[in-house]
Image (cartoon, one colour):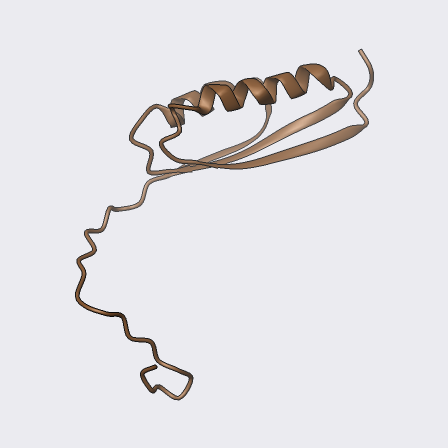
Length: 94
């Protein structure tokens, strides 16, 4: 095996990606296999998925270099209350 002298970092955002995530991960695996001289690192961020995105990414990253962050935010029920108003720097509605 050739020594690693190049590095590639892959950054990606995920949310409810189960329907296509396997295709994307297989493409990344193919890049690794076709470029053994390159050290790949993965930095994945996921939030609020309700499908299996989190577990799929966690399993995939177990044998790879990188970081995975998953967060959940409270779901807000935003209700429309009419047109938005914006203020300029003097505090006047524009």
